[in-house]
Image (cartoon, rainbow, N blue to C red; front, top):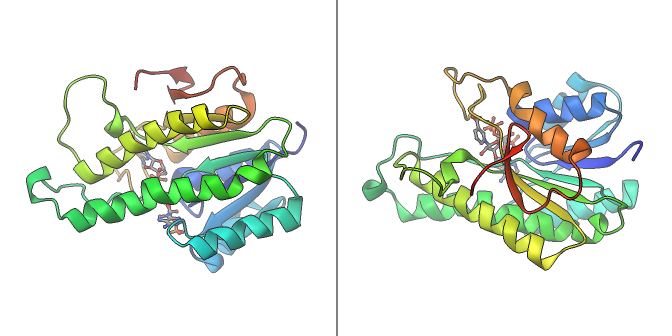
Length: 229
Ligand SMILES: NC(=O)c1ccc[n+]([C@@H]2O[C@H](COP(=O)([O-])OP(=O)(O)OC[C@H]3O[C@@H](n4cnc5c(N)ncnc54)[C@H](OP(=O)(O)O)[C@@H]3O)[C@@H](O)[C@H]2O)c1
């Protein structure tokens, strides 16, 4: 596809912003979404031509419906949805001290919000010749390997996001869904000690959005390779 229409949530900074810049550089028509339209506009200005700012709060049904209507008006279809936006509020919180409201709030953004946006965009995605959805998960949500005690609400939400990827794959076979871990990246969420840059983390986002074979579906991917759930 020559100029795919790609919507990225939470793209004013970090991995979402890096992915927006890389995808715009590849000729995609990028819709850069943020809860705050002025922050989205500033990010668009930093990238340059071919990028459209969009107000979108995952946790707000009306905001999501407005965003879908705007994409329909501007482009009439969506080729790729990158579900990048997420929150991590319990970095150093012990599981047994975890406030259930924090767990609920984390789910509201990371899981329910992602589901809400994806469902709203499906009619537009189904108009694409090669519809794809990339879900930004994390190794923190991986069930494979040793049990982890780090950031429990965030980790549990990312495990749920992985199951959402599988559920969507089964429910909507005409759209390609993949979950991915960007690796530990130096962003506001990842902190200054992470070994990777946001651009490194965005590499697999761009690959899944544009380059991966469409036979790769319903998978958990890291550094362009399938990894165990
Ligand atoms: N950094 C890492 O090391 C790492 C590792 C594994 C996985 N990940 C995943 O990669 C993705 C990007 O991470 P990052 O490090 O780039 O995070 P980040 O710098 O904290 O950026 C997260 C973005 O999410 C947006 N956001 C939060 N709540 C939102 C809501 N309700 N509606 C819309 N947007 C919302 C924020 O946008 P606004 O505030 O502008 O609206 C922000 O731009 C996340 O899904 C994260 O879980 C990151």
